[in-house]
Amino acid sequence: MTSRHLMIPAGIACMLMLAGCNDDHVVKTPVFQSGLPAYTNNAEAFAQAFPRQYESYRRNDESMTLTKYKGSVNFRKEDGGSGNPDAPVTKAVQPYLKNLWLGYPCSYEYNEARGHTYAIIDQFEIDRINRFGDGKAGLPATCWNCKTPNVVQWGEEYGDSCWAMDYNDFRGKVDMKNESISCATCHDTQDMEMRLYSEPLKDWLKRSGQDWEKLSRNEKRSLMCGQCHVEYYFTHKDHGPAQKPVFPWDNGLEFEQVYEYYQDKGPANGPFVDFVHAVSKVPMLKAQHPDYETWKTGPHGAAGVSCADCHMPYKKQDGKKFSSHQWTSPLRDPDLAACRTCHNDKTPEYLRERVEYTQDKTYRQLLVAQEASVRSHEAVRLANEWSGAKNARYEELMAQARENVRKGQFFWDMVSAENSMGFHNPAKALDGLMLSLECSRKAVDFCMEATDGGIAPALAGDIKDIVPPIMKHSRKLQQDPEHLKSHRWLSYLPLLPKSDQVWKLDRRVK
Image 1 (cartoon, rainbow, N blue to C red):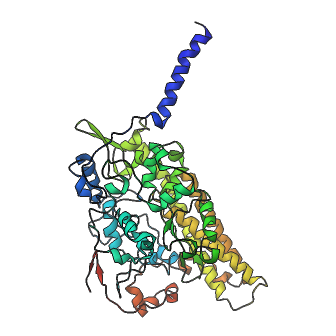
Image 2: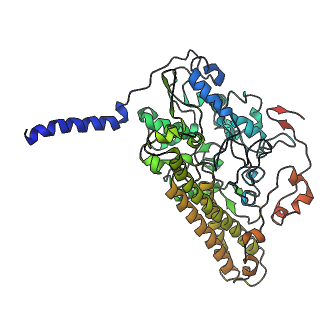
Image 3: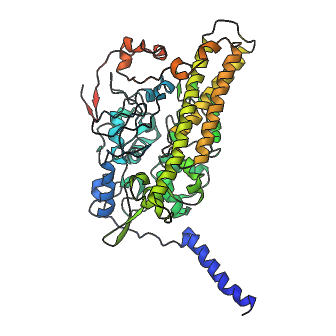
């Protein structure tokens, strides 16, 4: 046989291999007719037409299982407790969260989320949304954006003005359990095609010149999660509709690129600010949960493995293949079936050990970066109040110190707020924590130089002795003057007026 004859079957084989890798040749999912009207947001309505998917969706109601670092238990991230004596307690805690967000609602309460079916209930109950006094939430209606597909209709009714409305204006207008994150969040409710409901993602696709209809099915399967599992911010009125959510990806998805994006998105093209730290007075950013951006450039994202491949693995029941709609960690499955779809030469024990190896290393460095960030705030506090000899360049040095405090905490938070404890992208997580540590240490150095070393004795030693973690703090406690005397940092907060709780879940009780 000639070499020319050998080339023909080889060429055919190559074409077949390429076809297998090209998403356009993948068998399309069938088009369904649900028989339901458009904008059917109640999940129960889909139970009869899609019983397997619905049954797996209801497994998100389970709230008593933990992995090593995450889980469905609504535990407090600063101490691992949950208020439920029957729930397991995690040891994967971050004791300095209240310190780092002091002056911002996250300092009142910051919990691990339960399953997606609890998204509204958990938000109603968390102390970040004000439930006291005049009944105003203190946060905009934008906070509903990732909690219910009802936002689509509210947007049509109120336009962009709805974002700046008070969050509590919409309490009582949603079925808490069945109109949370569900079918209508990701599907057209009539033909069940994947569709976007997220306005910030629609805006991003338009800004970046992408057409949703022309994206591959695999890209869409990940962007469904990327509607919410992302870093985002609320627009300052100088840059568009007030409080409208925006994805800060215009410069790229790397942490440094996101940080630079924020530098001119505040008032009069100054830096965007989520809050001013109560103690250091540094204008801060609060990261959300950048899972999509982290995964995208990680080993699985770069290899074309979608979010759904791991978090919505295919199941078989009665000979029918379907995607599980229990959105959860693959580690909750003892057999790690989602992982072994590709890694079928490895045992579940081996795979779990490899995941936790990455997570353990990330967690250890997360705590190091967290403590360095606390030290940087304390250094700025001391330098702000320093009355001794100062460097001739004091103001310039302090400006650089504040910038590094802001940057250091943001890079830490981009890893802390992300949901995989580094596993989605180990290199990016550790690099982000290294950058955080570097910036925080620079901030301390600038403060030292600004005060000609005068604050050095006050910063010598273990930060846990210098600034202990604040383990108890809430809106109710901030109404008590004795509480504000219980920790030096708490004394920088204003005393809140005495008031009763006026909201219980979706009901106004006073």
